[in-house]
Length: 627
Image 1 (tube, rainbow, N blue to C red):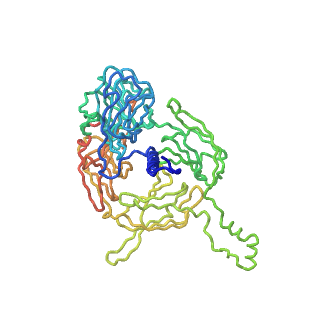
Image 2: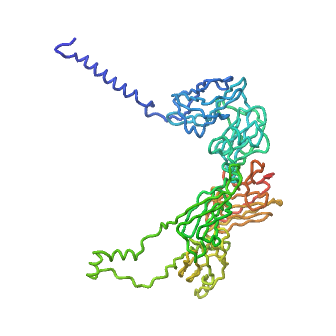
Image 3: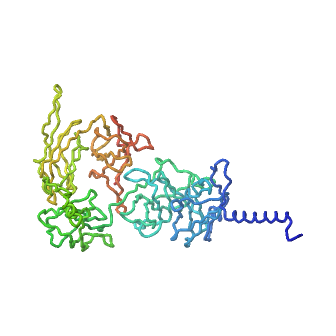
């Protein structure tokens, strides 16, 4: 009851409480659902409650599958983990609806087909990200569910490491060309150890292969993607084990798996010109997509192309033409016409003509000091300086000729009894005079301790590919001091530049600071092998030796560090690892790493260590041949 225009105190308090409740309700209505702080950390994965339809449902004709859990969940890296087999034309949509994972199909499903939704470990709880076990859900659009399976191992054929970033495809069609024409009938993904399980297969033979399908088009792009295949059809068998929660049960140990897909990339790369540019005033660089390009003809206005000297890159996919005639002027603007072999739409190399107009701009060119001095001496300021006699004095010191600017790099790190020093240049050398180079060895009298230098004979050997590099071959000794001197005009390059006097001193390797590796090979049995000492990743080759008989192989002067030892079964005896060819049914040559531990392919070589290993090649390659 209102008196004197005021509300009773109790009603005022009630109104304030109601307003506060409405305010808090508004806040909590927008708040994110979360558990109260404190208490033990949640370490339990979500629990599967039910699915719609049920696991293994038959005659499925809906457009949605729902999977229910006991708590809020999310999908982590679903693009990486999720697969649908067989793959539909359009990828299904994955959505989270609170405690439910919802899969909506965006293209029609095949009739009478068993489908598998493989989530991997992408389903995690919403709080701590605890993953649900690798989860697979299957159903059929027909009256039966296919339940057979195939398991195997995918390996990189060259590094012998698990190939986990690939997809394994199975086809009912046995034609080789099926990988170019249609999507697979079953698809699965290996785990981090390269082990895979293809499930829900029919009781019939399949063609099986693995592809590093980077563009996810479910086709094989020849020469652009790695592939691994079997020469025989595979026969699915009953699945050995399946957990109650319908997750992938287990895999055999890798060494027990009989079906091994060895991944390789074919020597078939599409050939085309990537770039054509002037890297230097007297250098013309062609970069191609594939090695060993073929330029059939080349003409350049106002240039005699017969004087050009080609230099190839280490991978043989780049050609640099040097204008070696130092007396000929090279124009800043060039009109080029050339023909090279390019891959056409049929995959064949065909002549292709191009025209290019190239302009050279010297980015390093700057204003000369003479110009700066001229500017300082001009104008009112320069006149004032001359009047008061404060102008900078002109440097009258005799200057070296402008062409004495060539400074080759003298590399000494590899100088040892088994190696050589090196000379390398920024531009192509056209004249070399070894008589103007001196190499001397420091000798110390052990009794008097007097020291003196004596001449050392040497030879310069030009690299057959990298024409700007020379090996300095000499009878290098351990722990010995040498000095070199290059007199003026020992070298001239394509810019008519030569060197001034250059001097240097260095000391060769101390074996006590290095490592030594000895490998005792047995059971070669007439086969050829390539033995490589590589970096810890098995990629960069540090040393390489060839083997064709039982012998002791010694690697000296190894820089301390972590290494791998790769052995290649060189079936064709060409001294290198050869890749395979899918359509010609040629498997890649076998290669593997030596191991002291089954899980470890690296060896630690420390300073002063002398490591010796026995290698039984028959045990390393039991009945292996790439034929």
